Image (cartoon, rainbow, N blue to C red; front, side, top):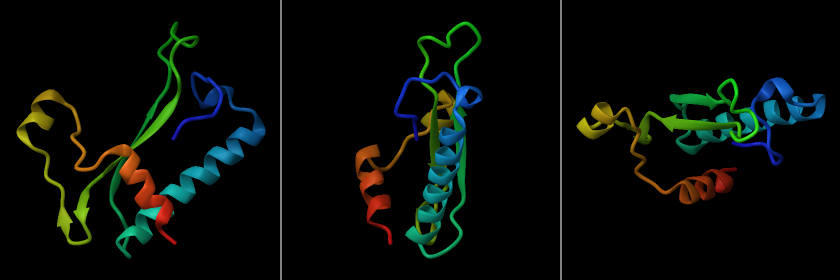
Length: 103
């Protein structure tokens, strides 16, 4: 999730942007729950600009799902743990498409 205009972090959101950000966060979490028809565990990371980098860093939110399927937990592999990097099983565009299709 990212704002449409360049913003370093939520501390500079206008009132309407705060409301829209909260709505979108709620919608994404709700869609994750409906994706497998159960509460969906995830890690949510908010990436805001470091001090002094506000002009170049674009605020965004990433979700790291803990489930591969409805009944299969995603275990981190050695490369993920060793590199401190999350490897997704699906392209971001495909994941976004799946979430958009959830009713």
